[in-house]
Image (cartoon, rainbow, N blue to C red):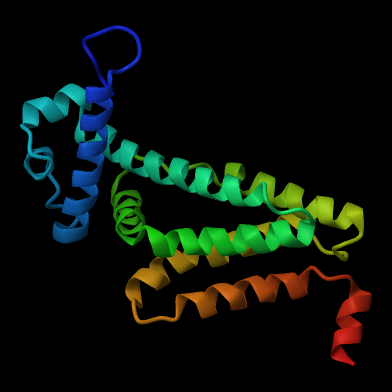
Length: 205
């Protein structure tokens, strides 16, 4: 956010900042990426284009704030629940379920972010390596503790992220979908995949 004062933004500035992010999400969701001008977003937020450009130097900067806000909110939502999980198995189940459930709780923000990332050459999401690394470490810790079997943590982490990232588009395109069933099945699929071979063989028999 661009401010003429030095130091941290005031409460009023933070509120206006959030108002503009919310308005951008609403306009993109309703009217589409191409129609979401700064002027239209400002009107949606009940302010002027000049005020919007006081807080954000360009539409791209505002769009980056929309994307960053989603990832920051998601990270907080995830962290609170992962901290409550004790074992590697519980943490993996929590990781998958909370990622997918977060999408169902914030459909407009997720959809607007997807439109921005698909259409903008200057706005970027969190780097894939940043998303994969903690998941890979979780899988490795489960292997080290003996909870998980032998598999490639990198490939498995990438597969889990593919399911999560793909669900964002699928959920939005299929609002009639039983999301809770999807979430439970996705978690169960990967929990079976990481089991030690001895447990998998026992289940099969």
